[in-house]
Amino acid sequence: MHSFSLQFGTALTAIGERLIDVAVFSGFTIVLLMKSTYYLKNIVRRRREVFRQMYYAGVKTLMVVSIVAMFTGMILTLQTGLALKDFNLEETIGNVLIATLTREMGPFSAAIILIASVGSAMAAEIGTMKVSEEIDALVVMSISPVYYLVMPRIVALTIMLPVATIYVDVLGVIGGAIIARSHLGIPFDNFYAHVMESLHFKPVYVGLFKATIFGMLISSISCAQGLRAKNGALGVGRATRNAVVASFLMVLIVGYYITEMFFGKGL
Image 1 (spheres, rainbow, N blue to C red):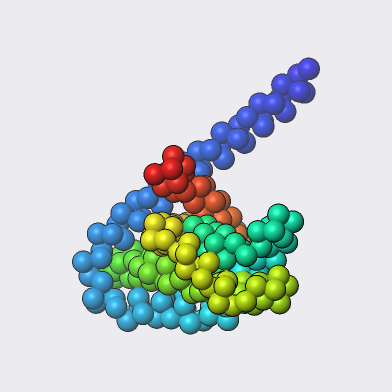
Image 2 (image 1 turned 90 degrees about the vertical axis):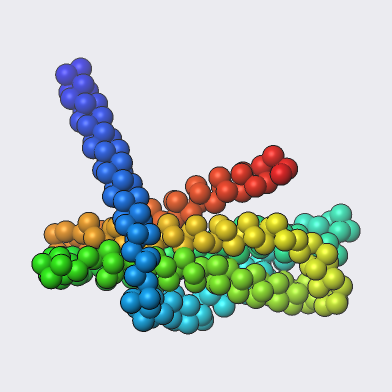
């Protein structure tokens, strides 16, 4: 009985420490985002770094985004189209596809790609600078790490994720059209007519709003994890892993609540 009580107390202590760590990190990330917002007044001075980060987030990930976008549209069309075919409704696959892409899968797919490629790189890069004391050197020179490193990355990813979302939506529709023609026998003009019929403004702007929030969250979390890295290479690896996991969870959670806010009550 005493052993069980001891184990139970240890487990509760571990859970409590974990919850405290999450609360501290959440506060640190929010403060970091607020400081970055404050330094937007100096964005012109850091425009080259912003453009460089936009290049890494956009052009460097173009091939991966293209492949994922095409196959997202193809898989959605194939699976949903086969289900609709049982009810002789396969011609409406264009309506279903564009609604799914613009509301959910477009911003979600783009976010997952950039978490893996850009967010992890941000955490690793800043984390390496932290453990090698380069961040401390900036502070000694009276240069704010938030102004110099964090703000350009948050701005770049906040801009590029909506752009990537539009790109995913377009390529997803193209991939869906190919599958609709080859597997469901739906002509291209018929497919695109149904796509345009269901292409409404509200799902598009909600999807882009999601992407903007996702970009802000991913970059803030990744930079915060990098700035909190410690214990050398092991700490950098841990920070990178935590950045990916935390970003993924926040995309899922925040994405749900944004959908609930705009569509949950039929608004």
